[in-house]
Amino acid sequence: MGDDEYPCPGITSLIQQCWAENPEERPDFGTIKQTLKKLMKGAGTLNLVDDLLRRLEQHATHLESLVDDKTRELAQEKRRSEDLLFQLLPRYWYTDRQSGLGPPNLPTPLDSVPFVSFPLDKWQISSSAERL
Image 1 (cartoon, rainbow, N blue to C red):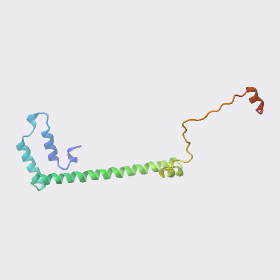
Image 2: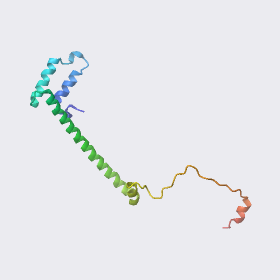
Image 3: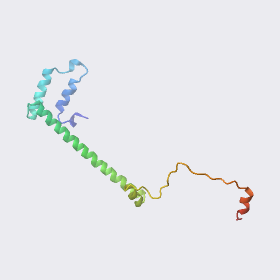
Image 4: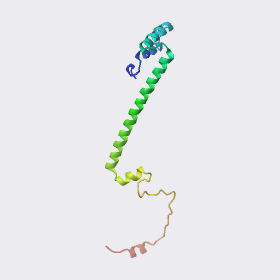
């Protein structure tokens, strides 16, 4: 995610500075405190907990909007796939499938099949066959 996707880019850049690989590039606690005070004054509050709760609410609202968007996209894709199924398959097949019945006349899988063999003489078979 880019910095512009977060509600407060100032906090994002401060966090990135604090995680710098070179310890000399990291801000000291005084600088962090001043930066946070400036950012909180811009938000209209000096209470860190209130500001944190406000930001969490903003983040939750943002996540809810993302979930709504993805849910809407999923519903659209489902409609498209159903339309495609209606075009490719008979309507009764799809309707039965939705109701849980499955397509009609499905073959039943068998675990074992009995096999019966009768020894026949090849002359008996040829004598009973009709000529074309």
